[in-house]
Image (cartoon, rainbow, N blue to C red; front, side, top):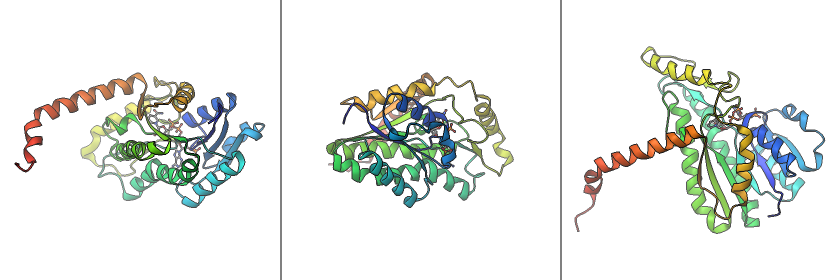
Length: 278
Ligand SMILES: NC(=O)c1ccc[n+]([C@@H]2O[C@H](COP(=O)([O-])OP(=O)(O)OC[C@H]3O[C@@H](n4cnc5c(N)ncnc54)[C@H](OP(=O)(O)O)[C@@H]3O)[C@@H](O)[C@H]2O)c1
């Protein structure tokens, strides 16, 4: 890969995706970026030779395939895919409808799989490439009140780790990024979603949802610091497979690891008791 790379970034009209687009274009990279609405990208006109705005329905295999094809047609290769599009979904499992859960999984998980499936034939041919999946600290150490979102993000984390194993011999890296709270539109009403149905027994979850809403604009994480970190990742011969971003994510992960280790120690004899006796 040359010094500047070809990037494909999903969900780039705002937040982390938008920040990545701005910074990567400013640093001379070639960027293809997706949004549900192409009008979101009008501000970038003028970067035409290094810029490809794409209106994509991430829930459609055809739409995703066409966007990857256009990226290859314009730039001739594909070096980095950032699966960034996603949104939070609050609510107890019983409160959420199948449609609400399905929609969240379509965007947060199945779109990630769709994009990777369409990108890999080109990356395999190149014998190079880097897939960066934006999971969440919720995909490692779940909070309270976000069951479906956590499940989707855990799946992204699992997918990423498993893929990293499969693709390593082909020269393709995978990094699972698990951010803590970053100052984007994530907690704003036009991004985050909550179950329409509420059940009184789960009133305690509303406190956690209110905490998330109240965080808007004061989150500790700076999305503008991500581009340089991603550039370091994609030029490293040994990039991280799992990367926590933000002091909150790092601390929460450490607590989870300590709890898991303590539970494993407590239940060790049970864990080891199921083998056939030789
Ligand atoms: N900010 C945080 O605190 C935080 C923490 C952990 C993980 N994350 C993850 O980071 C990623 C980026 O989020 P962000 O913080 O930048 O939030 P954001 O500012 O709300 O941006 C989210 C992006 O995802 C896309 N998106 C949202 N809902 C979508 C839907 N229903 N269908 C298709 N695309 C949709 C949007 O794309 P378009 O509108 O352009 O189509 C948007 O640009 C997400 O995967 C999120 O789960 C964020």
